[in-house]
Image (cartoon, rainbow, N blue to C red; front, top):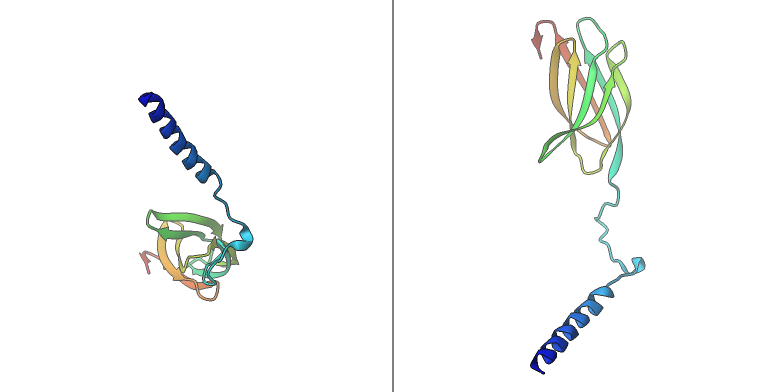
Length: 132
């Protein structure tokens, strides 16, 4: 008899817990979200970069976000024949800066550029024989 009572008591507790857990829900209209919460996960920024090289030619640009796990590639582009790139880039909304890596011939540069008013603008200068 004691075994049957223990089984019934344990079964009643398990049933009560499962019934309570199964009926947890909320209507979307009942959510109260603070005005400071940002719903967007991406933002589009304007990019205007001039890469000045001694021979005035194309250069490669790579855009990265920088976080706890290091750099994450966002996009790769080439400048035009005059070393200029102008376009749009979709980035995570929380970013305040980007890391840009450039390549011209066998020379590489890495810079950090702040995002201001949803835009980045910079000039990168290469000189023969040394990085600047």
